[in-house]
Amino acid sequence: MSVHLLEEMSTPALDALDRARTVVLLTISPLETHGPHLPVGVDAFAARHFAETIAARLVAARPGWSAVLAPTLHLGSFTFDSVGTVAVRQRVVRDALVDYGRAFAPAGFRHILIANGHAGPGHLAALEEASALVSRRHRVIMASFTGHLAWEFMRGRYAAKIEARLGRPMSDEERRAFAEDAHGGWWETSLMLLLRPDLVDGAYRTLPAARYSWAERVMPNYAVRKGGRGYVGHPALADPAFARATTDVLMTEAMAIVDGLLDGTHAPGRHRSVFSRVPVFRTNFWPAAAGVAAGLGALAVGVAGFMLRRRPPSA
Image (cartoon, rainbow, N blue to C red; front, side, top):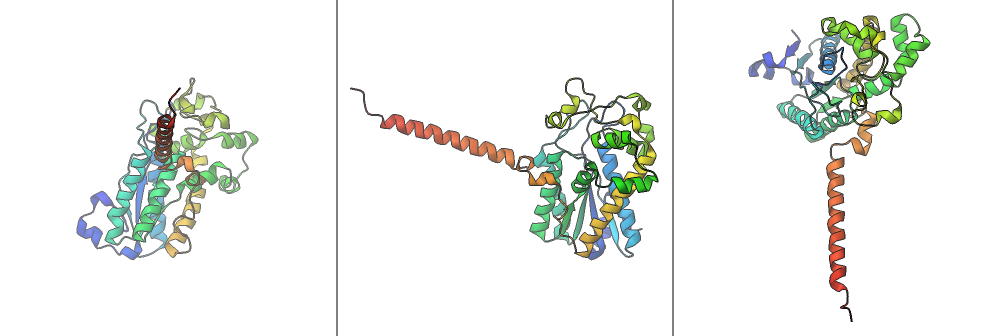
């Protein structure tokens, strides 16, 4: 068998793999509220499906190659905080993946891919930072590109391809819903109906649409504030056929990136998300900002003290 589960392998079995033709897949996503109708593990289920599909397609297309699936890490930051959500500090997410990368890269494994199902901006930035650090330090290919795929998907870049897979154009209502979808809505509910229908509460059919403006979406925990129920979008539209069409498109796009990485035509950082380019989403931004603020405060106190000492005595 060319697809292996890391936790089931012995050290000699892992060591016997051809390093040049082995891909290690790290799966990571948080446990997070996704509304009253979905389990908190939605992102992890999505990420695992993503990893398993990449592994299966990779070994089918490349005879002699192997894929190693590491156990899912239930870690994630920039989450909606509610009962059931396990929020992890952004730096911890990054460092955990750096440690995993350092476990494989020095042992000669050259290709390490991250599968992720969570679209929190800072979370995506942490995955991409970890990939860049390991790639640079160990001169391997470690890449996280699910943020890029999620961004293109949410912007509607794949809409025409999805319609082709569906075999019909989306209605005006569906196009509006697609533009508003973000979390626990049409797509993720559809995906869970495809992957684990036993975990979807049938009440999804009666849930009203949860719409939020872009101004509201920049607020932390916006989906659980002011009576929000932890989802964003239109879960009542959910349909496994929609999930099948969208995941097929996403996996085709993903495999094009994977092939480019393995063939050396794509650099590991080529398909970063837009969020890793925004300073406020980087793991070192707020600690650095706090340090600068503290330094400026200390400087101000020092200058004030100096000026007071230099003040001439009153007559």
